[in-house]
Image (cartoon, rainbow, N blue to C red; front, side):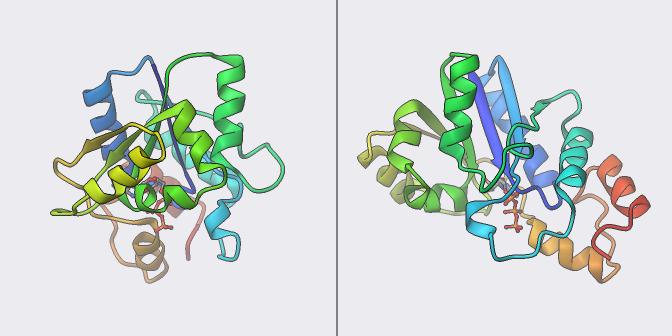
Length: 193
Ligand code: ATP
């Protein structure tokens, strides 16, 4: 079994790290692939503060020992569509695939490019981002499209990259919210200032 966890990771934070740990605990996958996007289809208009290569490096620091960080999307021209990535991965490494998403992405998934193809070829695993969220309606929407969803709702880690970009640009202390090695890299390279 292979799990694909994609995102902008601008910056990667402990919510992402905690999500990956939980997915590994629940699914015990053979491969856990972390995929920083070159251009997120839903964030084309927004400013990405770190460069693609900095986001890739931050992911490598954050997931050392827990997942394989792939540069497939970073090196592919244009908008990073998940279906293109899944098809490319499956072509070179056929396996049972799971797509890992946070709860906000589960909600938006039906609007993704070729969403029906995504949920036909990959199962979905979702990690809650907030306590008390009701994810069942969103899971049902995916099931109505023919997909299968595994929900992981225990102990959400409530943090977002948006919150961290704001904190870092205002010199607020983000210790505990970002992996230490990533925090050192951000400070050394003066990202988000
Ligand atoms: P932004 O605030 O810039 O939108 P983000 O914190 O949502 O960023 P992304 O890189 O966009 O981070 O998210 C990548 C994936 O990780 C998405 O599927 C998202 O739902 C999930 N995710 C993000 N934060 C968490 C969290 N705290 N817990 C669980 N999943 C998360």
